[in-house]
Length: 471
Image (cartoon, rainbow, N blue to C red):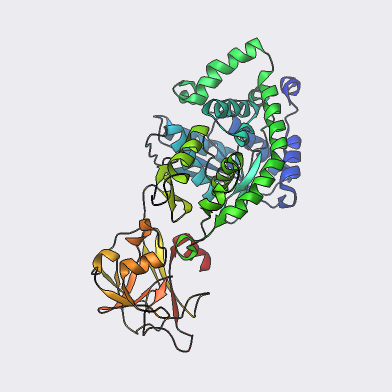
């Protein structure tokens, strides 16, 4: 290591391995390490250090993933560069092209969400995804969140480590200043990409990096480092508050109707309103974080309470909290929904359930399997193809008799009784034998179709991810 790098920070393969050992512990040395490789100086240095560790036998598997956003005219060249570097260092590389939807929240946010979906996929089955964020990135993030009106948890900045899908995300260089990373790259003659967009001050982070932080450092040298230390101290102080908030959150959480929302955590608004004002805000932020959603700014949090939580009792309010997510309230429950439904609006169709036990309907699947499910009656299914309908295909005055329930009611009344949210009602599949309803998967079995022996079938309408896990 060069004397320049030594004077800045003790960056070395051994130091990086120590960081990995302290944070990944029992996962090493067999844990697959995947570098988020943009081709920039930060990720290039990180990948170089890991290949040195691999060659020393300290880690067993190093690979990389490159996200091709397509935003720059140079995007193809960057992907080719990353492939060339990985070929040279004998590192397996996966290049993933993504398309961005910018609906008012900015390209930065859209690109971030697309990247993290790629990263989640990169650690399916376990492993660790490594990013090259450094101390200067941390200072920029803390300032950016302060200016946007973040809460206390936002002041903590970029987390060094957190869960990511089936694996974990870790940033081993987060305490290293950019100057040390630059010094390592130049002393080892590493080739890297200089993204022309990094100087575009239309992007907030670039404005901080190119203009504001240099001015602050010129006036108060070392301010960035002190800002990072401050953020770390706030994080340590906030741990006890977070523990209390998690306990309060559990007292507000519900999971109904779990057969339709795949145990998505809902907030009981009545229980939430029993908390003091400060705790309510912290609980909402923690609830969104547990679903992998970026905590809202102060302004957005105020809107959540003003327009949703405190809306009149008979209202079904909702607001947009990101490019693709809505926060809504239904029957006293707060729920996060996708702004664009990907459920399938299908026409009446025949389903040969004996031939195909799983039928894909958009982002959900209709699944049939032998036996009864917990809390649901087993169904005696006719041994022939069945007809699938949606609510719009069923006459409004048709009366239905449900096994174990008194009386005959219209579909509208039964859906209200079973507390099915309005945004799902038009997509639910209903199973028919000719003109007779057999069942509403996951909700009810109609009179005359219950299995008397209990060894019939179960029908569920569930997310395709959940279906894959079961299979």
